[in-house]
Length: 79
Image 1: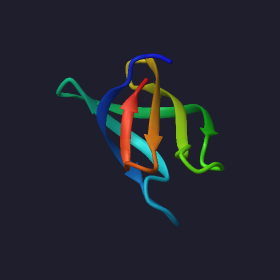
Image 2: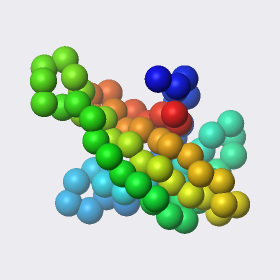
Image 3: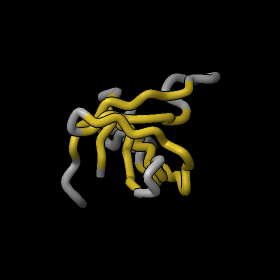
Image 4: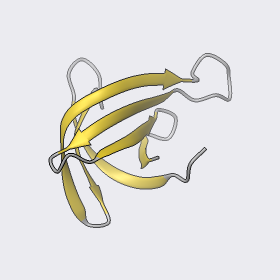
């Protein structure tokens, strides 16, 4: 697994919290998410394996990132 770095993420919250990421802050710079290219899930079925939501995203300058939401700790990370 790649190194994870904590980030602050702004999300759309519909029927559940943190439903869709809309932007994030990394190294004091704000990035607006323009497109979610892919989304997948991991864990959450077995005890001790928290549910993780992964998003492959594109930001305004065209750069692509993978970010992850950890449901157990209510935290986001840049992968």
